[in-house]
Length: 220
Image (cartoon, rainbow, N blue to C red):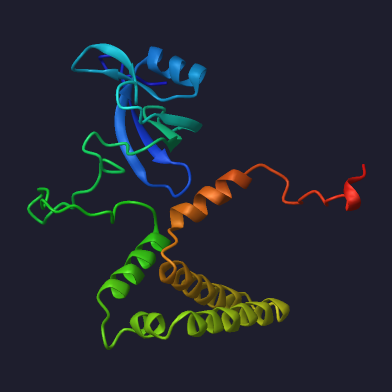
């Protein structure tokens, strides 16, 4: 590990479910050791000159899932499960201001820094749901109701199956993208967030996907 002149190393904290960068802090060797020992993120406070556990006063802890070191060994990446909002402002993550062309924060709150392309598409779906546009495919699908959306999901699932059976790689990619998009429409229509789906997947991570078969009559 390569520490700076003060014995510190930056630590980037990332949500282990959707990849959102939650915050950046600094660790010394003591903070690293405590983080590894307790599986709860600890930092070195440069202002207070003391070791502290994230969430020790707010209750918004960061539960460690995995740790990585970059190629130069001078930055740590911590994948963590946040308990409540990470930012002291009450926002989910600390990066909620977009930088302007002048290199300053624009003053508006946005969640666009979080997650990935699925989150961006989902947010667009919610925006079209709240403010429909006459020329928007998403708006037309949502206004068509659940049956119209579900019919499209079934069609796209069938297209994925056909593409896979025909072993056509490009078509598999294209049709899977269509299926994911229309599945996001289902989630948006029912106000089910991607984080809820991620959390469900998280509960299954590392576990067998085979459910035990109930014993008929309760006999062992």
